[in-house]
Length: 214
Image 1 (cartoon, helix red, strand yellow):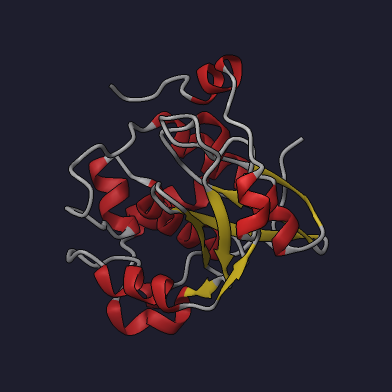
Image 2 (image 1 turned 60 degrees about the horizontal axis):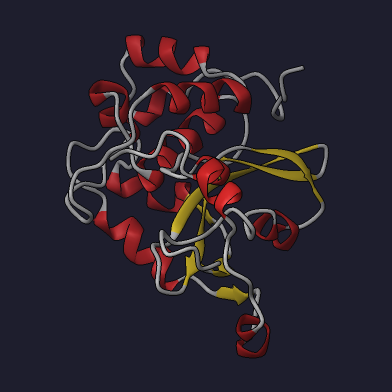
């Protein structure tokens, strides 16, 4: 069964979308459909830090890294009637991960894209943002097999950044990355807990790297 968001809605005509883009967004009417779209397009493997595409550019170029995918998901969730949220997951000795959280009947889920198969969709079954973030703990590991997730940022409502035209800008959206970095973050694991962590075994690592771009 597809997960439904708050209410059916038309993509905002004041957001700068073209009629064709509004039609495409209407097709991404649930979190599951948004995730299926992100799973179909190739992961953006351009050198880290070279691009931060808007949702318009993701739809045009047909590729996204994790933050670009989260922005597209947030725009589609907004078009479907929910707030456009993005949330940072922080790591040690590893890249951070950005997801698009959403609520359904008071429970949290997330849409996300990643090179790692375990860091993508989450069904809306989590009672808090902490629970949602912790659901990523075991599949969040480095190529060396180290469990690296350490915290999460309070979600950002992207409507605060409408002046940047974040939905449709042709420019890279680096101010949004800066805003995620500055956002208050909550620790999930202290130094004592981190010292006792095991390394990822061969089977979990193989599963997590399924489809990893070489």
